[in-house]
Amino acid sequence: MLSSNAFVDPGKMKDYHYTGPVEHRFSPYSFNGGTVLAVAGEDFAIVASDTRLSEGYSIHSRDSPKCYKLTDTTVIGCSGFHGDCLTLTKIIDARLKMYKHSNNKTMTSGAIAAMLSTILYGRRFFPYYVYNIIGGLDEHGKGAVYSFDPVGSYQRDTYKAGGSASAMLQPLLDNQIGFKNMEGVQHVPLTQDKAVQLVKDVFISAAERDVYTGDALRVCIITKEGISEQTVPLRKD
Amino acid sequence: KMATLAVRQSPVGGFSFENCKRNAVLEGEANKVGYSLPAARKTGTTICGVVFKDGVILGADTRATEGMIVADKNCSKIHYISPNIYCCGAGTAADTEMTTQIISSNLELHALSTGRVPRVATANRMLKQMLFRYQGYIGAALVLGGVDCNGPHLYSIYPHGSTDKLPYVTMGSGSLAAMAVFEDRYKPDMEEEDAKRLVRDAIAAGIFNDLGSGSNIDLCVITKGKLDYIRPHDEANKKGVRTGDYKYKRGTTSVLTKSVTALNLEVVEETVLTMDTS
Image (tube, rainbow over all chains, first blue to last red; front, side):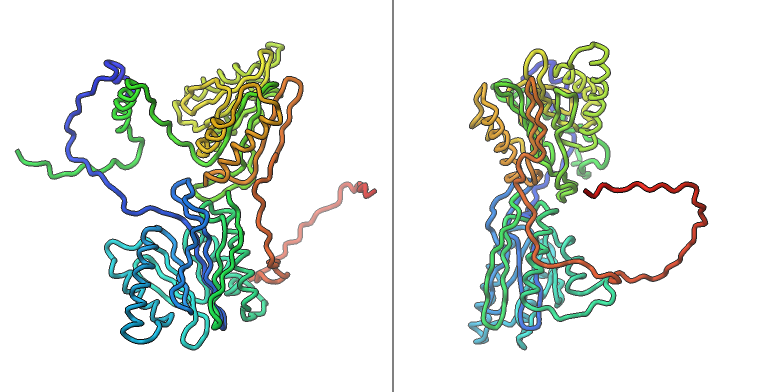
């Protein structure tokens, strides 16, 4: 075996031959898991995320929600690399304040989404490793969801899942909210209670099969009355 | 002399033996000062075993993962070797399953040939000789336990074929969490209930703190007179209760085309078996 030459003179430092320059790499990113989900209704919006923060096979925290309140009518969910999530939300908060001070009004959900796109693209060549979903009410009081990729491409949606279990949740939402792949089903508009119930149920399913999702679920419901929060326990294994 | 322009990239494909020389040097240096290098981690499991007053107890979680997705929420990791010997398996699922089945089969033939109850040391010897023959390519990390004519025995067996005979062992990605519990609370000659509680808590530590382990706790208590295969011993994680109704009505899936082919069969025999509905 290759290591047998180590037994020739155990403990003595072996002579190394210069093999040429070798590239060493340090990765500035790490993946901290987490799943985010947002649903837009007629006069409400829901942003939900699990609260588990993990790295590798370990759990850093069981109580680290990924929903961040931006204004009275907007909540952002950020998952991916936690370091970039924290920095990005700090930057967004600062920019919100700057806008308020110069324009004497609070940023609308659509404006925040457009701004976030430019912030993310500004780091096109060293991206924020964050999957963002904004949920809130637009200027007309209707529910709005904006989903992003790590470099700022965005669009307005009715519903979107992001993060580690997104591939499991998105098809389920397509079926239950978008009525895709179903025949002869009445397209009833989504009520707030049905939407909250659906969000809780899909996360229970996600926690079953995705190791990064679990511990607890934080649901933020945005209506013209304000933002209400609910916390639901999930599997802890 | 001109500087080398080409930067050596990490080699693609195949097995890389680059680190073996470095590891051998590091191991030598570490051993000289009295330390040993940490072993490589196995993926997605917590298994453990403990020797107590009357026998051995084996424990395992029940999650099987494919990458970071749960493939099986309730798989059985405690495998049968012989009526008095059982084996927990971590690592590649197919390898642990087939290896234990092969040794179980050979051990049964061996027992018939010797006319004696198989010994744990025999199973250990057969397992290690097979794993060594395959030079670590069979990714099976096992915790072997049983009771024979010489008393209770517990072995841990590594994929390359080395074995350790110890009073308490843990394997898998959750082994550190489980071993932490053992190192805190293990005592020699424990009573059965204390030992069961200890193994249960060790596996629970793996289930809750390691992402590769989860779901339920299986236990196997082996003593001279009896065998208790408790599956599950503890349903530590229950699926959340969903409040919505997701049943699909008949006709939800659209039928694009339908063709019916009649099979012309003749009735040869007709028998009626009544069902006992009492």
